[in-house]
Length: 329
Ligand SMILES: Nc1ncnc2c1ncn2[C@@H]1O[C@H](COP(=O)(O)OP(=O)(O)OP(=O)(O)O)[C@@H](O)[C@H]1O
Ligand SMILES: [Mg+2]
Image 1 (cartoon, rainbow, N blue to C red):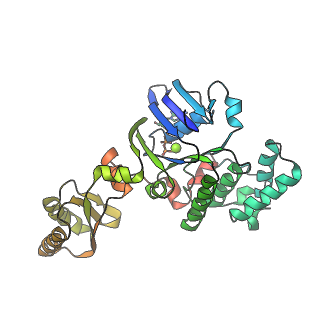
Image 2 (image 1 turned 45 degrees about the vertical axis):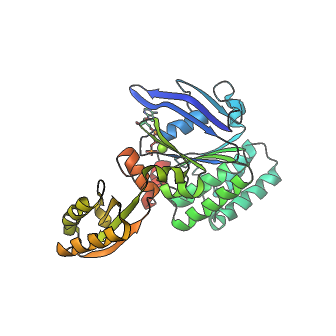
Image 3 (image 1 turned 90 degrees about the vertical axis):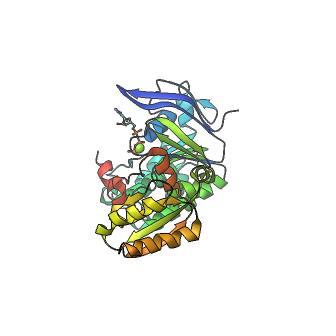
């Protein structure tokens, strides 16, 4: 029997662009699927097809056992969606936005009021509840949008980059909300650029690039797939990146990954502590001053890099302005 979210051979094109090019997904009820992929990979298009906002070119899609193409209205009654771009009515206050959603779902006025109050508290918006949401910061809008998606507790939820633009504290709090939802039986498809987030929340991870699934499994399985340990070095000065990269290339067992802005270099190695000592000795011999050095297990970032050939790009939301810009689109 297909899971609570199911896609088989999903294809969606826009002119010449094959945004989604044959994606299969099967998410068991009560679990979280993390859909990862770089910008333009097709994540939002997958979400929009599954939530009836776009009609796929081909493919079999069902949500909560309901055919998405044949019974879109029925599907809509069973899902909650928090889109990539916060969809709040700017002229209504936070409280009015939530009450309006509750009324759309035919909740009695008293229950709607209570539910709105509860969610405003939960998402730390109580102080701003009675101001028009156009006065909210990007992170506040994002939180209001998430609260709106949770007004009724739908059995299946879709969240497209839910924590983009949230500060670390709010991100943690949203993770708690998500864990609670899922422990109550909700099935969730979540897209994210934050690999750490998928690591924390997702039972299964599906990595897509150019509209195709390039890997899937649990986070441990994906890490095991690229295996091995890594030496990570942070050099003191930018001009020491080049000589450090040469040393690490010579001693490592693969490509040296360089992050210029943090002056961090990483290379896969075999040989553990002994190899680490050699790296330190050779860096010293080249006069490279280091701020930090260590051996570590691969992270999901490494998995991502080795699968897609590039690191996950940071969204504009990273600086907290993303949702603001997007809300104005
Ligand atoms: N309405 C549209 N018309 C034309 N092209 C589109 C449309 N929507 C998406 N695309 C294209 O489809 C591809 C996938 O876009 P999509 O928004 O699904 O990517 P994404 O993985 O969500 O990216 P991001 O991480 O930037 O949100 C991109 O090449 C995009 O330009
Ligand atoms: Mg997107």
